[in-house]
Image (cartoon, rainbow, N blue to C red):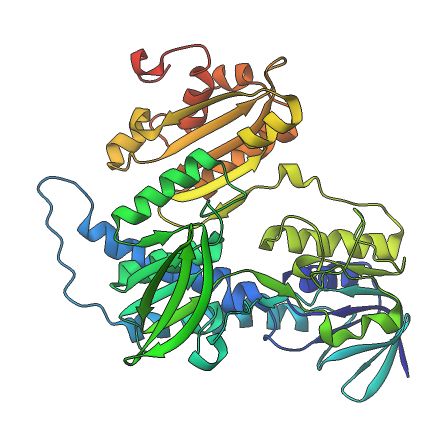
Length: 467
């Protein structure tokens, strides 16, 4: 039986960050991966391929909707198969450059492709062999959750994995669930020319987001031709006249929609079932997620877990990678590293993008009983006017007494880029006065943050440029 300082189970962002840090600390490490290829969700079936296709759709949409007088652009051809093929080629290239080559250069890390199962709290079995370690990191990610809808398995469906490599574009697409994944794929396929309908269980298309902005995003998507139904109770799925029909209920009323394909985007389930965690006495919750404390320790103090497999609230690529780094230091050096998730932003890569960080208005109301909030339209942002993309909104959530910025929420072109400056506004306890006295470059979209801060004390519609 081979013995290691650290065994990492998984091969995605969290696992790779852990392996890199372990190698830097000269720890003899074993990386055991099964399922998705090296790189996990992000590079293979997540961020990289989806954003590649989203950008292709954005280019097509912009060509038809640039709103600049005197310019007439014609899209002569759209080859769906070629666009998908290019996306898959990019995935292969980035997986080789950012994961396979990186792994080969990690001097202290050994890699095997196999499923891992715990035999005890200090041993695993993989590929028919036993391995032991002083410390473990579980980073096995998650898999699309398939809701228990009558007839769905018999009728057939796709998840985000299949949706990224379809060889034939569906004429119609039903998206079960919204959220970041459902919204991005819905808009992507709609802009490619597919007729799309979203069936969402919640009232909001993105429950964690600021309600005012998510409602506005829903309006924008509807104007692009996407059907959005909320407060939906899914009832059954069946084959009908060569298509797939979904019956559902809204406020007691029965409705039905049919399409050539169904995309399931109803959440993800942590990959813990095959790990035999009871043999290691590692606790999981009712959703099969590994229970960890703020330092990523499980119920076994020498076993850590990071990324989609754990029960922490924020699940996205940057946090998983950072968790892997911090958990490795905690495991090997005895540190107590943790992340303040209130200072970690999210982004939904629709067009316009939806991004946010910190408290929403509802959260501040629950916490303080009142809210000092302002929303500014991008129709008041000079750069947005220049770009002819003024449908966005920015909302600041402020402490009513000390004027500290508690939340920033943006619906706008490149909101994912804009939200980065908000990290430091919240992390460094900045006030709206600090922002109002700043000097952002003119004309830029980032000027929206200053104008939103000024809106608390001024009518920004009456201000000149470069104030």
